[in-house]
Image (cartoon, rainbow, N blue to C red; front, side):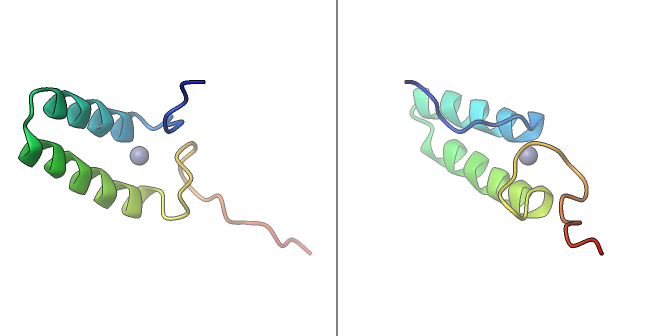
Length: 63
Ligand SMILES: [Zn+2]
């Protein structure tokens, strides 16, 4: 089993890849940068921790 975070969001993915690459090059500051940016993006775009699907996911509670 080799399942890292199941990210479907392209932006999260991009930060993920960038971080992995930076780490490979031992560029810790860059990796940290990517992590911070990804965190920010996630907080803004995936407040519920849901990575797939954007928009309103909260709408349960119909009459
Ligand atoms: Zn994302």
